[in-house]
Image 1 (cartoon, rainbow, N blue to C red):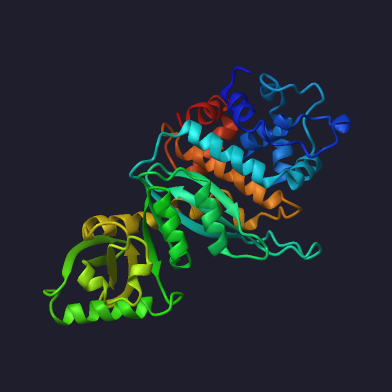
Image 2: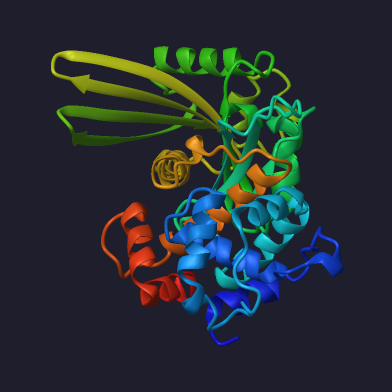
Length: 381
């Protein structure tokens, strides 16, 4: 194989077992996976569109795949992806990401979950699937993803996902559901730092932090080691101001009940978000704990980076890939297709020569085979 997509997939996805009976196989698994990835990059959102792409691009695909038996039907794509082992695909995905991306030391890695809205299957009593993803916010790369087990939730899925990743030197940010002592310890054990949102799911913690900042503010923060920073953003006829206060020091942290149970807790943070629209002003307070030192400007930047997973990944999946409209739900099909969407996101995000957003890049890949090759072979090198 002389074209990069075949080489990449064959190298890193060779450990994925074909679920079909060998003597009945007409189309090799490598063909099915390669055509699927190419088709998704080029705008396909379901198995019928993937099959149509394969048939329409048969001559081009035949340059690096053995298509002596033709291209698979949409039923073949659906059946194979429904039966592929998602854990083997996940391991292969992470192997691929690590091979094509440089070490991410200092990177903010945002962890967050997203529901596949139409993945539920009433006939098979299969509930809606939630995928928890790890997003490198600066590199704009999906590092890994894991489906939440039917009998579990994100609290148990997050540690499993973290264990799959090389986080050395990174800063891991998670919403309030990840504000767990065990998760904080695991992040530290993997030689990373944490910044965790605090809400009401930890007994006393939110109330204690709120009271600490209230008392500190009443004394103009003179009795605590406090650092302050702010950002101002203007646009769309509104002004958004974010104020950040960070408090550290053992004397202050002792105010929190059982604070010593939180591993390497060094800083607590309060962010006040103000939104000015005309004469109307609204505000909201959010609270966080972190193993990072007391630097309000850096902490505010880290927290703002976390929101990139919504705009850089979840919004792209919903708008450019129409993930919420996907009706793929048979067997493992939904979670396996989600993984291939993440592969496509990584490649399209990291192809920098084309103008426009992801939707425009997908159209270019559909119309221009040379551009599709560029996305496949050079996007993350």
